[in-house]
Image (cartoon, rainbow, N blue to C red; front, top):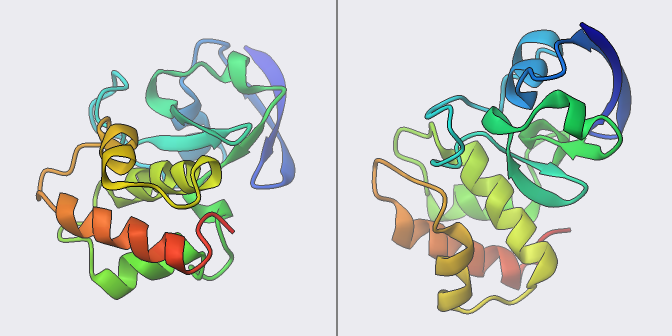
Length: 155
């Protein structure tokens, strides 16, 4: 076990964890930030996406030891009341069906808009291709990303 001070959603948080423990489990189990979801466990589906130093990563396969010195943003950190432009667009377009993958989808979309404020369909497809939605809401996801871009994007 090792001690880490993580900056999560702008707040310094201390944890004691095995250095190889996936960041996902530190966030969910030790810090009780349960918005980030577990699905595949091998970094292939995107459900567990968070931002590390502003870039999207798959927290299920990223060790806490590699995250310790960089700021981490989870879905809870986008806004205090769910009014981030991407979250608002998601609601306006009515993207989710089951909703399970949506935190990861929103985190990936937010990272895309931070780097590409007005993405093309091709840029959206390329950026979001690692996020799987078993309900198949891809067209609504794309529409919501375009709407969020029109409303100020990554904020």
